[in-house]
Image 1 (tube, rainbow, N blue to C red):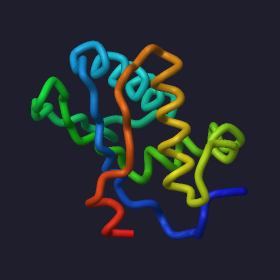
Image 2: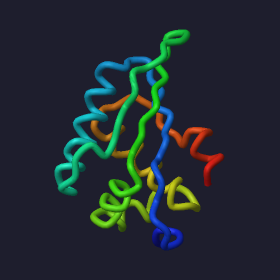
Image 3: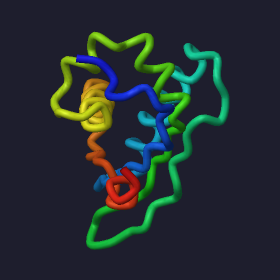
Image 4: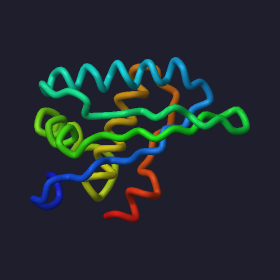
Length: 118
């Protein structure tokens, strides 16, 4: 499998949900910063401040299409093996696994806003 289509990717809009925002945010930022440096890019992602509800923190994580493309070019084999039929689903599944491997307890999924755009 490979990335679906040849059109440039749009921005990924992800829901970042956790019961312990501060440490999970730190892990996510460290991972994304590391990947950004490896791709020789800057300012390619953003994690919004959370909204707190019923013991949960809900935030939006934005990842530029260019950043996702660069990550894919270096990790295609791993991403292609991740769960999902579409590239977006495989990429998010792979990213969730990377976060979990680093001890991040947040759940990430494609936000409804992004699903509506595709």
